[in-house]
Image 1 (cartoon, rainbow, N blue to C red):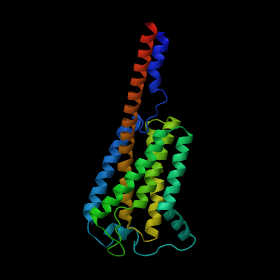
Image 2 (cartoon, rainbow, N blue to C red):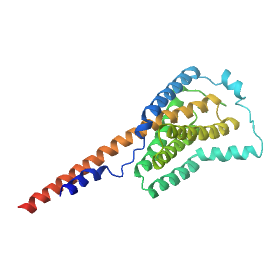
Image 3 (cartoon, rainbow, N blue to C red):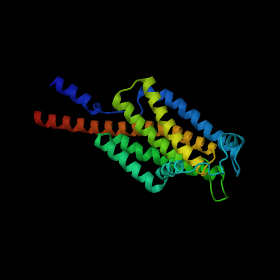
Image 4 (spheres, rainbow, N blue to C red):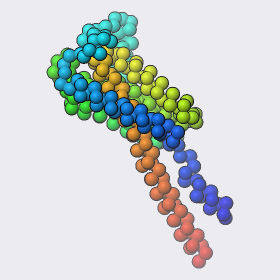
Amino acid sequence: MNHCRAWQTRSPKAGRAALLPPSLRVRLGLIAALAALVVVVIGVLYAGHSEPGRVDRWIVEPTADSVRPPWRYVALALDFLGEPAGAAMLVVAVVAGCLLLRRPRAAVLVVAGVGVSVVTATLLKHLVGRTIHGDGNLSYPSGHTAFLTALALVVALLATGRLGLGRTAGTSLVLAAALVAGAAMGWAQVALGAHYPTDVLGGWCTALAVIPATAWLVDRVADRLADGMAARSADRTADAGRQERR
């Protein structure tokens, strides 16, 4: 009986897999805070601007179509992944993968984290008011870059948990995934003349700031729900035991 009770006490927590492993919380929290600061600083510097800044000109002339076939086709393909149809396909595929791996928390994070990243980027565009190629084209930060970086971060966090990586390896994997995804989409956006390089940096940092915070929040809510369900289950078991003794 004691062994059974001990198993019942432990079982609600068995199988819980944190989206944001404890070993990564401090590091990713600091990175998220620094990324948020970068987003704010760049936004303040370029608020209301309609021309490339000094850094933008130093990297590449953003208003010029700087790629030709076949690289232009690669840039267009990457750009499609950030459009509604392409983004929906990617999100559905990753959510399906999470559910197949029995990671419902990760599936929630895909939808919530990516959604919050894109919404945040959209709100910042209207708040900052930076434009490219005309007043109607808000550019800072890059929503395409924020989307793909956010999705890569979620996948990297899932892989970190599945592989049981430690602090250094886990942080390296998460940052590498964010860097590859952000660099790929950022290159496409600048190459196609859709964004300034600093817009891309802002979008990348937006995802870095949003995803760790969203993962932590999903973990907290999921743990509380699980604890509540476990408590109710324990109460029902206790009630059934008392009734049997009667």
